[in-house]
Amino acid sequence: MNCQRCGAQNEEGSQFCKTCGIALGAAPYPPNYAPVYYAYPQPPAKQTNSLALIGLLLAVFVPFAGLVVSVIARKQCIERGEDGERLAKAGIIVGAIYSGVAFLAILAAVLIPLLIVSPLFNEAGVFGPMAMMVMMG
Ligand SMILES: [Zn+2]
Image: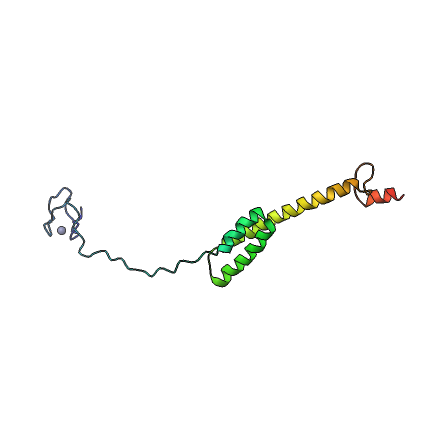
């Protein structure tokens, strides 16, 4: 085993170091230097863009508004070097998807009743130019 103080190789089971005489197997010899903790200057904590969080939340409940807010938030994050760009990006994606779904839902809610009463349906309920041509003879 190696002496904890001087590092000399000693026979296994030796009680004292043959070089410096310190008791082996005892508590580690205190290092002759105090651990120095360098105070590295911490980079200033980045401010998280609050609009980014609002945008993401909005995107879930009011998709289109959330999409717009998230786009603005992302722009602010980049311009100001603020945190939250990923949050804003998530808001944009969620907002876009939800907006698309909401848009389709509204479209369907408006169009389906229209189509049902539409004369453009043929007897089979098939909508399209073919039905119109059939109806027009
Ligand atoms: Zn020693």
